[in-house]
Length: 200
Image 1 (cartoon, rainbow, N blue to C red):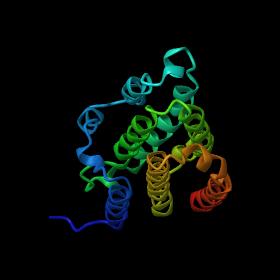
Image 2 (image 1 turned 90 degrees about the vertical axis):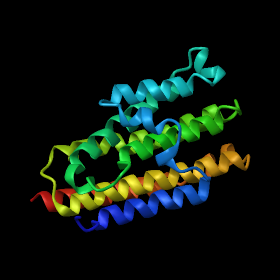
Image 3 (image 1 turned 45 degrees about the horizontal axis):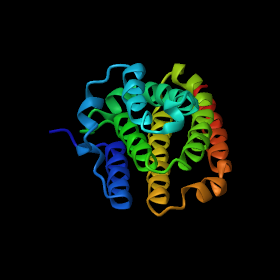
Image 4 (image 1 turned 135 degrees about the vertical axis):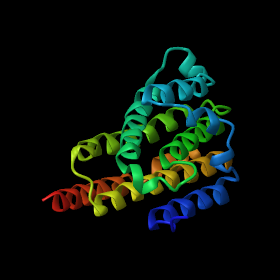
């Protein structure tokens, strides 16, 4: 039996932290089985669209939520594919965990119509950050770039856990206005610098 990679340990810790904060094990979450059979970003988006349909605003034609989920799903799916063998020992691959976390967040917010705009704002921030990272998936994967990709997955799980927790405590709309996008912009700048240095 192969020894555990450092990436597996980091991802396992992130999943355990998510479970601790939210009270939901993403690997056994009801959508997990459906996510395991998703072969493309479009398959994932279809599943998340079904969850997003619970919002009245979404059903009435406001598709902003799905529009901002698309870059998140596309980039996370691509990053996960690029990680490949580095995450082979993880029983529930990180992309599927992130997608399950997105669904948990949407489900938690669906009972509160005022959360719709705040949720759109959060996914807009995450989508903008992730869209800029897609260009790095075309570069040769180094161990440093793999580490950065794993850190991005861990950070996404952390943000999803915190946002879900805020919704459950009835503070999501206030929290999203305080959400520090500078953290993501700084992370993106660091990722860009690191990726280009490693690609040389």
